Image (tube, rainbow, N blue to C red):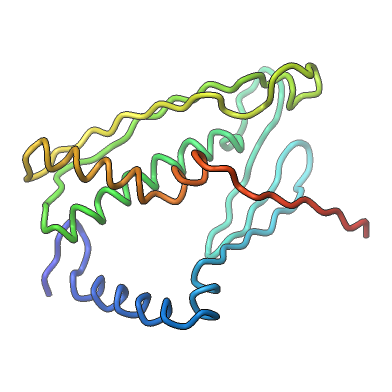
Length: 175
């Protein structure tokens, strides 16, 4: 079996063919695009998240000791970086480019964490700026890699979520 960048190319092709088939049917396409998560409080300022086949804990604990797990905004940075790395590897792979090493470094600045903690009403609690640098060693010219990076940012679900306004509906059910 042909393999590139740790990806079995025939399995990739089969997967892409299956997605294309699902995209032709409106109901199957809708399900293909839907993501769900269930979050439960586990005590203190911690929550357990179940989504897809994964489970992880978010820890917003305050105090002198560091949190046991990342905070929600740290997960956001990490998953953004993962989305960029995975997207880049995918786009390079379908172009036949071998990746030897790839890593991204991210830094985010919150506008005012005090608003999340109800210590301030100034500004907002979200990121006001995120910067990232992608480091890549691959069998391709620099300009080709820059082109793939631009396309990665354009196609990334997380980049698009952060750059565009997302419709967010909030409801409460008291049980």
